[in-house]
Length: 310
Image (cartoon, rainbow, N blue to C red; front, top):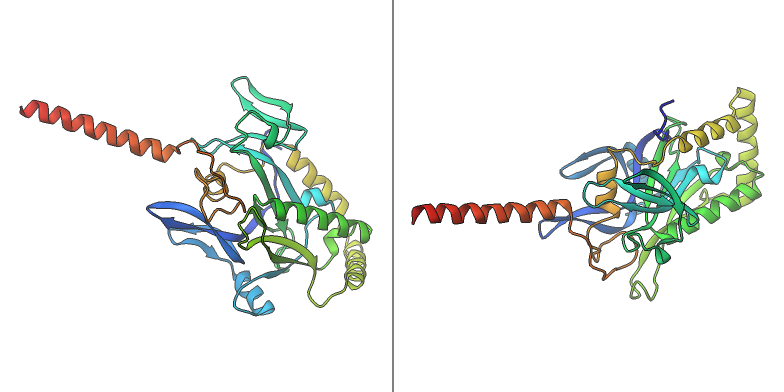
């Protein structure tokens, strides 16, 4: 295994509750009030829809997709939901510092260093740009039981709710989290911070029409079938754990630009997906700096031409 390369669950699609929109010539993140299931292919018009988007809409009905039938790939909650405080460089999108509130891994001139992590509110290192960042890996459908869909979020509400639910389901099922029939559900709430407007977050519940007791019994039956077939869930969890620990940062180089664009924009807007509005000025992006520099060079060149004509 290549050292320094995090081996994350194979991703076959994305789940989002937001989108990127064009506004005043800029690409900005915007909220949505429904799930969208996409492939990993992005065009100028946005991400291409995954076939499961249509399947789930037919299953749950309604005009908007607000519930998705899922299974979790691992029994260990912390393998399904990866969450930490993250700071990405605005110049090139590279992850610079990732921490858990106790310790962090930070890129520096001396290389990768392990330091204390007091959380963004009490950290003097770019605390205004550091925020919680979570990735939830789930299985949708039965076509590829080891292929996952990833839901990325910087929402405190989503991360806190998903973490709590998974630990509760893990406890009451006797550790059979990966065998429980579950459902992602979009919920709304309003707070003083949101100025009483609705914000949306992701919850995890047992499948529609199923009681908790029925879900536990189904998990026991599914676990028995898997063991009879030779499926080793404990070994899968162990391999996933080592894979995550193999690298300093889990996001791939190819995924980082899209992540930064959607979840770590240069300026918070009324459509930001972080469920909060910030009035703190931010560092100009690389594109903004290049555009300004190009304008300066054009002005200098024009002055030179005018001077030569005179």
